[in-house]
Amino acid sequence: MFSWSLKALFALSAVVLSAQKIQLPRTADGKPNLQGIWQVRGKAAADLKGIVEGGAIPYQPWAATKKQENFTNRLTADPVGKCYFPGVPRIMYMEYPFQIFQTAEHVAITFEWSQVYRLIYTNGKTAPHEGIDSWMGDSRGRWEGNTLVVEVKGQNDKTWFDLAGNFHSDAMNVTERYTMLDADTIQYEATIQDPKVFTKSWKISVPLARQKNVKRLLEYQCQAEAEEANGLFERDPRTWYRNP
Image (cartoon, rainbow, N blue to C red):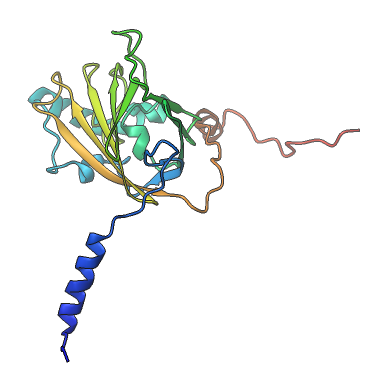
Protein backbone atom coordinates (compact mmCIF):
# COMPACT_ATOMS: atom_id res chain seq x y z
CA MET A 1 0.00 0.00 0.00
CA PHE A 2 1.36 3.34 -1.00
CA SER A 3 1.24 6.28 1.38
CA TRP A 4 0.72 9.66 -0.24
CA SER A 5 1.40 12.89 1.62
CA LEU A 6 -0.98 15.81 1.21
CA LYS A 7 1.79 17.80 -0.47
CA ALA A 8 2.36 15.03 -3.01
CA LEU A 9 -1.33 14.83 -3.80
CA PHE A 10 -1.51 18.57 -4.41
CA ALA A 11 1.56 18.33 -6.67
CA LEU A 12 0.00 15.51 -8.66
CA SER A 13 -3.26 17.43 -9.02
CA ALA A 14 -1.37 20.47 -10.32
CA VAL A 15 0.38 18.34 -12.94
CA VAL A 16 -2.92 16.83 -14.10
CA LEU A 17 -4.63 20.21 -14.33
CA SER A 18 -1.73 21.79 -16.22
CA ALA A 19 -1.80 18.94 -18.70
CA GLN A 20 -5.44 19.53 -19.53
CA LYS A 21 -6.09 21.95 -22.34
CA ILE A 22 -8.46 24.79 -21.58
CA GLN A 23 -11.51 24.47 -23.81
CA LEU A 24 -12.09 27.87 -25.43
CA PRO A 25 -15.31 28.79 -27.21
CA ARG A 26 -14.65 28.83 -30.96
CA THR A 27 -16.30 30.09 -34.11
CA ALA A 28 -17.19 27.90 -37.09
CA ASP A 29 -13.76 28.57 -38.65
CA GLY A 30 -11.94 27.48 -35.48
CA LYS A 31 -10.90 30.89 -34.17
CA PRO A 32 -11.39 31.75 -30.47
CA ASN A 33 -14.86 33.21 -30.11
CA LEU A 34 -14.46 36.65 -28.55
CA GLN A 35 -18.13 37.54 -28.89
CA GLY A 36 -19.92 38.81 -25.82
CA ILE A 37 -20.01 41.70 -23.39
CA TRP A 38 -16.74 42.50 -21.60
CA GLN A 39 -15.40 44.99 -19.07
CA VAL A 40 -11.99 45.82 -17.71
CA ARG A 41 -10.82 44.74 -14.27
CA GLY A 42 -9.16 47.58 -12.42
CA LYS A 43 -8.89 51.37 -12.52
CA ALA A 44 -6.39 51.86 -15.33
CA ALA A 45 -8.46 54.65 -16.90
CA ALA A 46 -7.56 56.89 -13.96
CA ASP A 47 -3.83 56.18 -14.16
CA LEU A 48 -2.43 53.33 -16.26
CA LYS A 49 0.90 53.32 -14.40
CA GLY A 50 -0.20 50.21 -12.52
CA ILE A 51 -0.52 48.16 -15.71
CA VAL A 52 2.68 49.34 -17.44
CA GLU A 53 5.25 46.59 -17.85
CA GLY A 54 8.27 47.69 -15.81
CA GLY A 55 6.22 50.28 -13.93
CA ALA A 56 7.37 53.45 -15.73
CA ILE A 57 6.55 55.04 -19.08
CA PRO A 58 9.84 55.91 -20.88
CA TYR A 59 9.19 59.58 -21.64
CA GLN A 60 11.72 61.81 -23.31
CA PRO A 61 12.72 64.63 -20.89
CA TRP A 62 10.57 67.30 -22.54
CA ALA A 63 7.61 64.91 -22.68
CA ALA A 64 7.93 64.09 -18.97
CA THR A 65 7.54 67.80 -18.26
CA LYS A 66 4.53 68.00 -20.55
CA LYS A 67 2.95 65.00 -18.84
CA GLN A 68 3.27 66.74 -15.46
CA GLU A 69 1.61 69.85 -16.91
CA ASN A 70 -1.23 67.68 -18.17
CA PHE A 71 -1.62 66.14 -14.71
CA THR A 72 -1.79 69.54 -13.06
CA ASN A 73 -4.53 70.65 -15.49
CA ARG A 74 -6.22 67.25 -15.82
CA LEU A 75 -9.66 68.25 -14.55
CA THR A 76 -10.12 70.72 -17.40
CA ALA A 77 -7.61 69.50 -20.01
CA ASP A 78 -8.51 65.80 -20.29
CA PRO A 79 -10.06 65.31 -23.77
CA VAL A 80 -12.50 62.69 -22.44
CA GLY A 81 -13.76 65.27 -19.96
CA LYS A 82 -14.85 67.27 -22.99
CA CYS A 83 -16.54 64.18 -24.46
CA TYR A 84 -13.99 63.74 -27.26
CA PHE A 85 -13.28 60.20 -28.43
CA PRO A 86 -10.86 58.37 -26.07
CA GLY A 87 -8.67 56.80 -28.78
CA VAL A 88 -6.92 53.42 -28.62
CA PRO A 89 -5.91 51.92 -26.23
CA ARG A 90 -7.76 54.09 -23.67
CA ILE A 91 -11.22 53.07 -24.89
CA MET A 92 -10.40 49.44 -24.05
CA TYR A 93 -9.85 50.01 -20.31
CA MET A 94 -12.39 52.71 -19.53
CA GLU A 95 -14.85 51.66 -16.84
CA TYR A 96 -17.72 51.01 -19.24
CA PRO A 97 -18.67 47.65 -20.76
CA PHE A 98 -18.34 46.93 -24.46
CA GLN A 99 -19.57 44.22 -26.80
CA ILE A 100 -17.57 42.26 -29.35
CA PHE A 101 -19.04 40.88 -32.59
CA GLN A 102 -16.99 38.58 -34.80
CA THR A 103 -17.09 37.33 -38.39
CA ALA A 104 -14.49 35.67 -40.58
CA GLU A 105 -13.44 39.07 -41.98
CA HIS A 106 -14.11 41.55 -39.19
CA VAL A 107 -14.16 42.02 -35.45
CA ALA A 108 -16.48 44.85 -34.39
CA ILE A 109 -16.51 46.41 -30.93
CA THR A 110 -19.28 48.72 -29.75
CA PHE A 111 -18.94 50.62 -26.49
CA GLU A 112 -21.44 51.84 -23.92
CA TRP A 113 -19.52 55.11 -23.67
CA SER A 114 -21.15 57.50 -26.17
CA GLN A 115 -21.89 54.61 -28.54
CA VAL A 116 -18.33 54.66 -29.88
CA TYR A 117 -17.45 51.68 -32.06
CA ARG A 118 -14.40 50.11 -33.67
CA LEU A 119 -14.21 47.96 -36.79
CA ILE A 120 -11.14 45.73 -36.98
CA TYR A 121 -10.50 44.27 -40.42
CA THR A 122 -9.14 40.71 -40.35
CA ASN A 123 -9.43 40.02 -44.11
CA GLY A 124 -5.81 40.90 -44.91
CA LYS A 125 -6.60 44.14 -46.71
CA THR A 126 -4.47 47.18 -45.98
CA ALA A 127 -5.79 50.63 -45.20
CA PRO A 128 -7.12 52.34 -48.35
CA HIS A 129 -5.58 55.68 -47.45
CA GLU A 130 -2.34 56.57 -45.71
CA GLY A 131 -1.60 59.75 -43.82
CA ILE A 132 -5.19 60.40 -42.70
CA ASP A 133 -5.47 60.64 -38.93
CA SER A 134 -8.56 60.26 -36.77
CA TRP A 135 -9.56 60.03 -33.13
CA MET A 136 -9.77 56.21 -33.18
CA GLY A 137 -7.29 55.35 -35.94
CA ASP A 138 -7.41 52.51 -38.47
CA SER A 139 -7.38 48.93 -37.09
CA ARG A 140 -6.11 45.91 -39.04
CA GLY A 141 -6.04 42.51 -37.37
CA ARG A 142 -4.62 39.05 -37.89
CA TRP A 143 -4.73 35.80 -35.95
CA GLU A 144 -1.56 34.34 -34.43
CA GLY A 145 -2.73 31.03 -32.99
CA ASN A 146 -5.31 31.86 -30.33
CA THR A 147 -4.35 35.54 -30.20
CA LEU A 148 -5.93 38.35 -32.19
CA VAL A 149 -3.18 40.85 -33.06
CA VAL A 150 -4.33 44.33 -34.13
CA GLU A 151 -2.21 47.12 -35.60
CA VAL A 152 -3.72 50.56 -34.95
CA LYS A 153 -2.33 53.46 -36.96
CA GLY A 154 -3.40 56.92 -38.02
CA GLN A 155 -4.50 58.35 -34.67
CA ASN A 156 -4.26 62.07 -34.04
CA ASP A 157 -2.33 63.60 -31.13
CA LYS A 158 -5.37 64.87 -29.25
CA THR A 159 -6.13 61.86 -27.03
CA TRP A 160 -4.64 60.85 -23.69
CA PHE A 161 -3.98 57.42 -22.22
CA ASP A 162 -5.70 58.22 -18.92
CA LEU A 163 -6.91 60.93 -16.55
CA ALA A 164 -3.36 61.31 -15.18
CA GLY A 165 -2.24 63.15 -18.32
CA ASN A 166 -0.19 60.47 -20.05
CA PHE A 167 -0.11 61.40 -23.73
CA HIS A 168 1.34 60.66 -27.18
CA SER A 169 1.92 62.28 -30.57
CA ASP A 170 0.47 61.67 -34.02
CA ALA A 171 3.37 59.28 -34.68
CA MET A 172 2.00 56.67 -32.28
CA ASN A 173 1.45 53.10 -33.45
CA VAL A 174 -0.36 50.64 -31.18
CA THR A 175 -0.09 46.85 -31.39
CA GLU A 176 -2.90 45.16 -29.49
CA ARG A 177 -3.07 41.49 -28.48
CA TYR A 178 -6.32 39.84 -27.39
CA THR A 179 -5.68 36.40 -25.86
CA MET A 180 -8.46 34.29 -24.35
CA LEU A 181 -7.18 32.72 -21.14
CA ASP A 182 -10.47 30.92 -20.61
CA ALA A 183 -14.09 31.29 -21.68
CA ASP A 184 -14.60 34.31 -19.42
CA THR A 185 -11.25 36.15 -19.52
CA ILE A 186 -9.36 37.99 -22.25
CA GLN A 187 -5.84 39.20 -21.53
CA TYR A 188 -5.50 42.55 -23.30
CA GLU A 189 -2.04 43.84 -24.15
CA ALA A 190 -1.03 46.98 -26.03
CA THR A 191 2.50 47.87 -27.11
CA ILE A 192 3.05 51.59 -27.72
CA GLN A 193 5.58 52.98 -30.19
CA ASP A 194 6.02 56.74 -30.56
CA PRO A 195 9.54 58.03 -31.30
CA LYS A 196 8.43 61.66 -30.89
CA VAL A 197 7.48 61.20 -27.23
CA PHE A 198 9.09 58.04 -25.81
CA THR A 199 12.67 56.76 -25.68
CA LYS A 200 11.55 53.21 -26.48
CA SER A 201 8.42 51.13 -26.94
CA TRP A 202 6.47 50.07 -23.84
CA LYS A 203 3.60 47.74 -23.02
CA ILE A 204 0.48 47.57 -20.89
CA SER A 205 -1.49 44.47 -19.91
CA VAL A 206 -4.88 44.14 -18.23
CA PRO A 207 -7.57 41.42 -17.97
CA LEU A 208 -11.03 41.84 -19.46
CA ALA A 209 -13.87 39.94 -17.79
CA ARG A 210 -16.98 38.55 -19.49
CA GLN A 211 -20.13 40.19 -18.10
CA LYS A 212 -22.46 37.22 -17.77
CA ASN A 213 -25.28 39.12 -16.07
CA VAL A 214 -25.40 41.94 -18.61
CA LYS A 215 -27.87 41.16 -21.39
CA ARG A 216 -27.21 44.24 -23.51
CA LEU A 217 -25.28 47.49 -23.47
CA LEU A 218 -26.93 50.58 -22.09
CA GLU A 219 -26.27 54.05 -23.46
CA TYR A 220 -23.99 56.49 -21.70
CA GLN A 221 -24.21 59.73 -23.66
CA CYS A 222 -21.27 61.79 -22.46
CA GLN A 223 -22.40 65.11 -23.93
CA ALA A 224 -25.93 64.84 -22.54
CA GLU A 225 -24.59 63.87 -19.12
CA ALA A 226 -22.18 66.82 -19.15
CA GLU A 227 -24.88 69.29 -20.18
CA GLU A 228 -27.20 68.08 -17.45
CA ALA A 229 -24.42 68.24 -14.83
CA ASN A 230 -23.69 71.84 -15.89
CA GLY A 231 -27.35 72.81 -15.64
CA LEU A 232 -27.70 73.56 -19.35
CA PHE A 233 -31.10 71.88 -19.42
CA GLU A 234 -33.59 70.58 -16.91
CA ARG A 235 -35.09 67.13 -16.75
CA ASP A 236 -38.59 66.78 -18.14
CA PRO A 237 -40.72 65.23 -15.37
CA ARG A 238 -42.59 63.29 -18.04
CA THR A 239 -40.66 61.63 -20.83
CA TRP A 240 -43.66 59.91 -22.41
CA TYR A 241 -47.24 60.82 -23.14
CA ARG A 242 -50.26 58.62 -23.62
CA ASN A 243 -51.82 58.65 -27.08
CA PRO A 244 -55.26 60.33 -27.14
